[in-house]
Image (tube, rainbow, N blue to C red; front, side, top):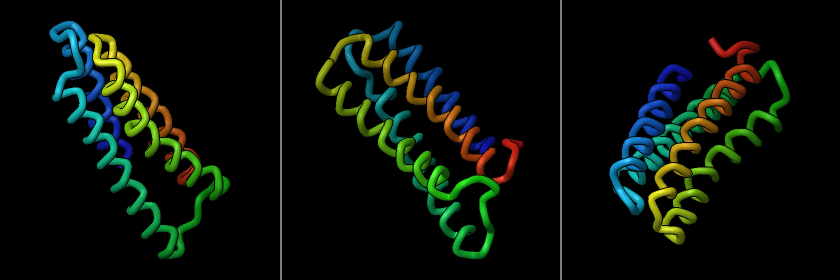
Length: 118
């Protein structure tokens, strides 16, 4: 799941950077890339929930793991709302930071779950 997340986040960052240079308002493709990150995080949360209900335990603290997932789920939503209010070229750049931050958070989630990210 980590490699899929890295790919989704990387593509989102790339799309948002290109749209920062090309558009002077929030681009639909940047918003769609945020939605892709959100869908990935929902799938990750479902996957983690099924694994935990199946008896797999996290090597770290469970509250920390689920706190990371909840925080990561709120990031794309919050930045989307902010981008709809701001409506400048820089909204695309701010949306790119979601991909970077979620990548780091998913890396940390993998460390908490497995003890290492890869």
